[in-house]
Image (tube, rainbow, N blue to C red; front, side, top):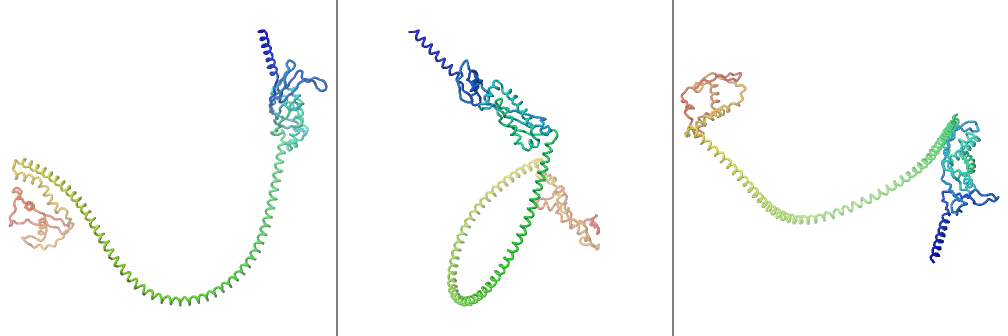
Length: 473
């Protein structure tokens, strides 16, 4: 029994391995590749053996031992062909730089050519092989065409290139996807000259066309203006005739209208005057009654207004008096407070000053040995200079530019001349010290001098110059 189980397990493993191996030999072809199966793949119709089977898309079982497979890449190849000095049919060498895009063909017969000639080659090797074929075909095509055809009829040139190159590429399993000729030039400058000739011709044709169009436009414009002026003149003539006829009709209609208006105005004025007279008579009566009523009403209104205004003014005066009294009371209270504060401050300041002065006087009396008279003399002696200044200042600022004196030289009162009396009176206008002391309630100390007797002779009067105004003793 155990041996049977082991045998079954081994058989199962072998069967599973065979199935996995069989599935691994079933190969799928991607869309961007061609799967080439070679080996024993069958025979052709003529009985010869097939070299390979090509599959694009789908899948196929690869028979082990007798069959194998590889892939061909369908990626397009860009080939730059810089063809130089290619000889044209006119024996003029030209340069034809161009670019070609090729790829492996998926046509059944062409795929077989690719499997037979490109299998195992890398893309750069396939690109070089295609480039050689394109070079040869380009030279062949250029040799059969004129430069004018190549340069002007570019579609024909590209068609020839596509047809010849693609035929040769299909022989190795490739197909031409795109052709692009960038520029065509020649060493002799023939193509450039053709271009200049074509450009000059185009410019001349354009100028000619422009001149013709301008000519046609000018002629058309002149004809249009002529037709416009003719039609405008005709329309103006018709319009003027119509306007004149309309104006005549309007004038007649206006005359009739004014006549009717004058008649209506006459009737209306007469009626208005009659009605105005009646209305004036009625209005006089109505005004008389209205004036009587108005006077009565105004009298009553005036009385009411006077009474009301009197009451209002009375109340207003009462309110203003109350407000003014309150304002005066507040202002008086504020002023009283301010006066009280100011006088209190002045009293305090005066008290302080008097206190200081009393202390100073006490110091002066103490310095005079306690004798008040001596202290007074000391204070007067200290102020003597100021008192003299006051006396001098009394006449200091009197401006006397010139004094002219007419004096006969006769003696006047007390034997003095008029000039001496004038100056003596001028000097006496200064208050003497004794009078100052008397006004202060004091007596002049004896050491300051005594009053002279009344009979003492007056000093000689000074001389006065009549021209200069100077006074000399």
